[in-house]
Structure formats: C-alpha cells, structure tokens
Length: 168
Image (tube, rainbow, N blue to C red; front, side):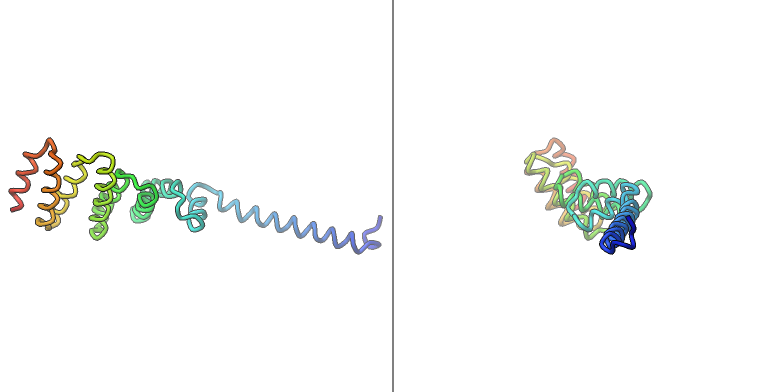
C-alpha cells in the first residue's frame, strides 16, 4: 500500500510522529525534575507548598550543604505545617544562630504553646526562652517568662529564682 495513495494514512503517520516527539520532549523535561530529591521537591513545593516531606528533605539537604538560610526557611515551613514543639524550638534556635531575632520570640512562643498542650507543666522550652530574652537585653520580658514558669512548679525553681534575682 502506497503512502502517497492515501492522504489519510499520511496524516495519521504525521500525527503519530508528532505525538511521539511530544512525549519524548516531555520525558526529557520531566527527567530533569526527577534527577534527585532536591530537583523533585523544588518542582513540587511551588505546586503544593504544604508537602511537609519536601520541606523536611530540603531542610536537611540545605543544612548539610551549608545553605543555612534555605534550611531555615524549610524548617519554618515544616513547623508551620506540622506544628511540632520540637520543630518550633529548632526554628527558634536556627533563627538565633542566623541573627533573625525578630523571628525568635514567635518560634519560642509556638513551641511553648504546643508543648504545653501535651504537658501543661512543660518548663524546659519556656526556660530556654526566658534565658534568651535575658541574654539579648530584655530583662523585664524575661522576668515575666520566669514568673510564668514558676507557676508550673518546676523542679528547678531555686535556680530560676536565682536567675531572676540577677535580672532585678
């Protein structure tokens, strides 16, 4: 059967070839997305910013490679999505290390809130926050935090009272 004799067959062959070329191009394009976890999650997160697995993966990758600003961004996003006290606490510590002092109180407050929901007598994170406030020159706020901690009757009450005395 001659191709020239049938224009419909020729059109069908051209259409099939165009589809194959299109599929091939799409495969090459997607292969760059699936190159590794970093390229995959950098592709996925703009589409689905609440994909916590991507934030965890990228936070670990960027921390390992020394890109601490990007690691911090992804830790904050993971904390926002999952709302774990430990993640908020680590975000506060990261913010301190990076000099993002505006972010620190909110991260500590979120960590304290979440931890206190599980254990109303939680005082360890709260104490770290009070000490942070004292160390950056906010003794009045630190004293308020210490007083809130003492209401929880922590086993470290004596030490906390000594720290409060030094701030007064």
